[in-house]
Image (cartoon, rainbow, N blue to C red; front, side, top):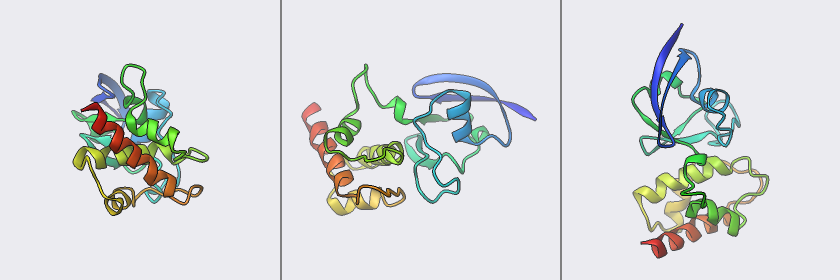
Length: 158
């Protein structure tokens, strides 16, 4: 059985019919064509599917789309402003925070939630903020440097 889902995705109001069993990641990728969010482990262990729901990180592989009724969802595609990379996205590019890139969207979204809550985190706070996101390529140093770059860049913008 389908129900009407009213949700704000990346700043745009959407009304879509979704089945009760549709996962948020399926709705985003298959229903809306927002393929930046990745399905990694399909069990909530890797964080590649992290999106923001009302500003808080959420694993879209464990979330039913119908639960998003009346909520705001932000994906990695929703971070760019006027065609310009968000400072976090820029940081991952400049500091080589992604190797294969598969975990990067989830890392970026977790970093966004962290920096929204704490605009000047310590290295330990960055590690804690990204602890639910796994990377099998980088060793995390460049990821931490990417977030630190974003912190400095965001200070310049204020």
